[in-house]
Image (cartoon, rainbow, N blue to C red; front, side):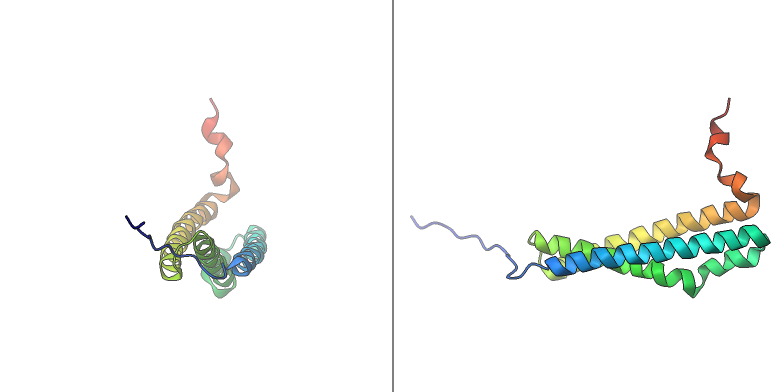
Length: 132
């Protein structure tokens, strides 16, 4: 009786460098996004202008956010490739997860900024909901 062979996919060179580079790029884009968002909210607090919060939909906030999304997608796909997934499947799954998550987070952030604009920082005070 002859043993049956099962074909496995093993990458010749797993993308360890891509994994680390995507992680570093994601952290850098995340820091840029944090600083930009913090500066825009502080500027809005000084002016109380609705125009400042509307600028959050501009290029200065979208570029780091898109960088985070792309970096997370590459990070996830490289991780899947390291565990043996073929690149086409790894990138398909990772990009759907990254873009979907980014869309949900952006929706939530837009809602929070809308609440902030309507009611100031008191609108985001979660402790007031739990007072008896």
